[in-house]
Image 1 (cartoon, rainbow, N blue to C red):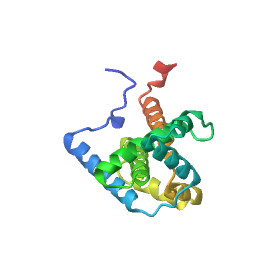
Image 2: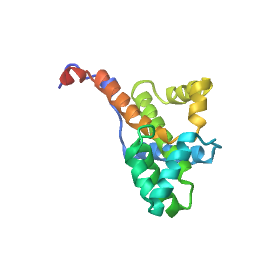
Image 3: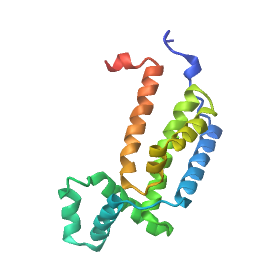
Length: 171
């Protein structure tokens, strides 16, 4: 047994626990999808690129790889969301926003569950919504939320490595 292992940071992952977190994540996706979100210029450009790709226009393929102002990841993820949304009869940009924001919040929940219990996650979300800049960015229909998911994952794993003293293995 590792003497640096802290049993208080151990994470319970029972099937019931996973089902509960999955249900919360699905509920959060539905709630975010139903909220009113004003569009942004970035969403309009990415949506035009996706529509051109779906229509088979050559400029859509050129815009996908040739624009430095609008990165490829949001366009590709919006394309995948549009295809999935057509099957589910939903709006693609709203679906993309709901899934990516829920995924980021899921990482926040997982961090707080490991350290401070169930109450810290809703308090952290309420604090983030209380700040005007965070609240405004949270309610905008922006495809660049896709970039927040890897950042949230990296933050989650850095917190884990720090808490389990695994950063010394990294160095």
